[in-house]
Amino acid sequence: MKRFAMMFVFTLMTASLVMAQEAAAPKPAAEAAAKPEAKAAALPTVDEVLAKFVKASGGEEAIKKITSRTMKGTFDLPAMGASGTVEMSMKAPNMNFMKIEIGGFGSIVSVFDGKAAWSQDPMSGLRELQGAELAAMKVQSDFYRELRMKELYKSLTVKGREKLAGGSAIMIEAIPTEGSPEKYYFDEVTSLLVRHDSEPETPQGKMPTEATFEDYKLVDGVNTWHTMKQSTPAFAMTIKLEEIKSNVTIENTKFGKPAAQ
Image 1 (cartoon, rainbow, N blue to C red):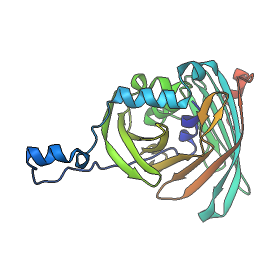
Image 2: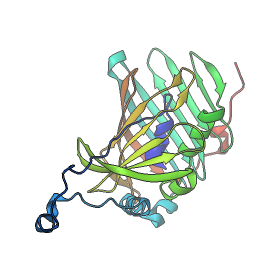
Image 3: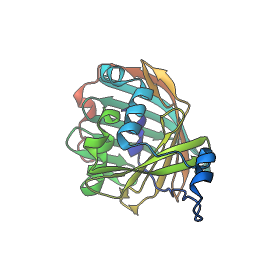
Image 4: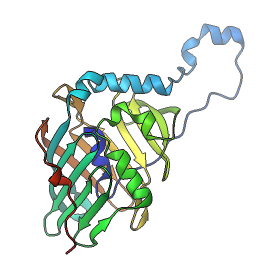
């Protein structure tokens, strides 16, 4: 839902992780037993990580109580000296609308109407998404994605434990039906999603992208990030949410494809 929806912005998402290995020299059983703290903690299963994630997010009941959501905020692209506003509308089960307004450039719009996806910007005009781009948009637009991760990917595998800036996280590798593998990092203390790496298809080719999520706050019973930092080889940007409303009326026409100019 909320935390995933921004992931298909006009550039999309991210990639990376290596798991630490135990020391090569074997230790005598007596020494190992005397120093259990030297052993790395056992990795949790996928089901355990996802169950903790759902609970930390507010729980299944709270998540399902929300059927639509609108979000407004701002973004900054420091390297380009650009800034603007972000507007999103999401409606269950899988309708998604995003509009980014950039001063001096114009609007960038990305939409999934439940079946088809399209984008529009001043450089490329109106463009319908196909193939891996469409497949990624379908996954990213699932309103109850927190609850459906195992249904949305061909496979999920716990790959290891990673030290991030804010602490330690468990990384799950997700294999989609189309496109490159993705990596989700769940904080070991809060169990919340703190980073997502992917390599989405774009008109310019694959775009390695890293998105981090910060400043979680409860919104209508659901833990929701309010700051997302996204970096690619081309640029880095920060999105800050200022207004989030749940269970608002959103007409289906909001997700309609405009006529080509």
